[in-house]
Length: 125
Image (cartoon, rainbow, N blue to C red; front, side, top):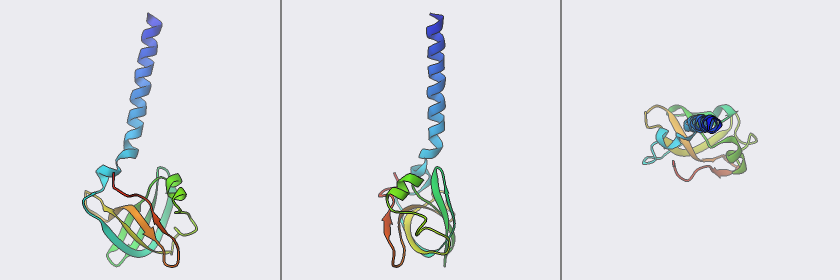
């Protein structure tokens, strides 16, 4: 009986720890306003391929915008690689603005002049 209680307690701790660790990664829908969509054009700067998502800055006529993409593996599988997404590249992006205001966008699509157009995400989920 004691062994069963220990196993049950250990299982409860593991489940709670896993659920807590997963929460920060799945806040895209809470972070971005799915009712609004923006299109911006500019120059890519400060590209960071670091988990959990790719982040970069887009320098536009409206100022600097922080852009968040899908996870690195998903973005690469959809065609968004370091070949095109690099500092100095010209790009047009569409996406959802941050709910809290500010110059941040959850990426839906990105296109490069003379290069690919990549659909990253269909909804802000």
